[in-house]
Image (cartoon, rainbow, N blue to C red; front, side):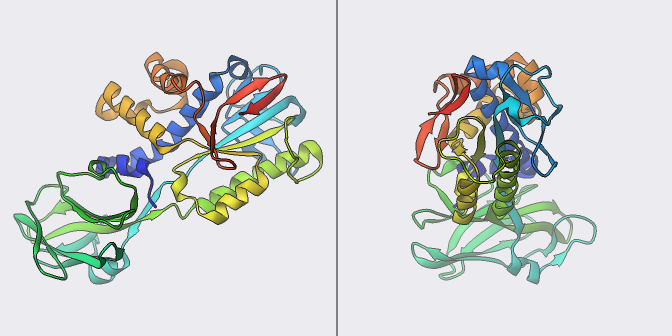
Length: 357
């Protein structure tokens, strides 16, 4: 499955990669706000320090909660892991867009930049094998004036629209098996269903004799095993430095390792198993919270809203902190879905410990 966050940010088209990178930053802002929601945690946060483990490797983690308020709020190094009560890492694994192999075989790479050479009136076939009606697909033909899409089975007309600069055609299959062709003036946002798979034709340039574009396959987070390994090693390394063992300690309260992730639909089972075997708490910020925050930022700051999504802006811009804090406050800090029991929880300070409940 592909995440609802991807459905939202795909509308930004050529800025989508830039906005996509900001999903991880938004996850960190929401987590930061949720930690600040408990004032006692807020007083004890060290933001992005380097935390040292048994291996003497320094791990840059998003947040460390110290036993006492740290002298330095941002950065620095923490060698004395006896002085902390928990640490939080944030990981986002988005959709990876890679060139469709069939398209790559049939079209020539553009020698002067991104994309491939697409001669006018050439057929671009796109087919999905697993839809509600079995194998379904389309043929796309583009001339100097219009885009014509027909069914590659019945040859009936599916869509005809005028060719526009930076034209985009999306083909998608949703969780109920519905196959959809989404034209240039539409978006994945127009569909309320969960997205199973997706291919996108993007036209980068319209030349005199040809087009420059690409058909991308949208893959649901193939990087999750690497993210899982990274997070797991940090938890193991720091635990070994503190307690002399890599093993999880039941009902840990002295030093709590927490991984916060979003776009959880992209995490395959082996990656979920890995983090649950190594990290005390694995929490999910649901896609709808990330999307809500993006919408609020877009409304508040306009087209350049993604430049405001940073920890520095959260700490120094009252408009930014107001948006994020409001999202967390109206849920009373309970924004994290615990993947162990599927219960929504908050992170709190109690009697010198971090409590997730």
